[in-house]
Amino acid sequence: MRRASELDRISPENFVQIGMRSYNSPEHYHFIKDSKITLIPANQVLETSIEEVAKKALEVASRGTDHIYMSVDIDVLDSAFAPGSGANEPGGLTSYQLFKFVKLVAPYIDAIDIVEVNPLMDYNNMTSIVASKLLFDYIISNYYANEDSK
Image (spheres, rainbow, N blue to C red):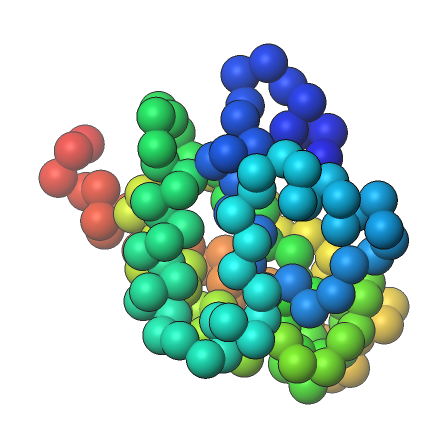
């Protein structure tokens, strides 16, 4: 995210980081605060509706933009739902919340990636299955929402 924010045609003011539970370093904390990135931490997501979070994310990301790109770091999920991620930490979102969020925003998202899936650390392919379903839900939701424009 930091490198993307340095590109000429991308404004950090359109970035929304959802579900963060802690900062990796003091530098990361200062980067988020100084760059005007909208942060919706995990505890705030858990205390409000996923519909409100999706509405806020789309509002910020679409302000003055032509396209929206979404990167899903699978460690946004609680480690109970994604044990094969790069940074397991308790207090994350449920898989249901993430699936619902993606279905809500998919019609407005032009491209997506899913990162931090580590099959070597996974248990019973749980994380890989979640990532696969997430991508499938995005493709289907985006396709049917935009079917009339084709």
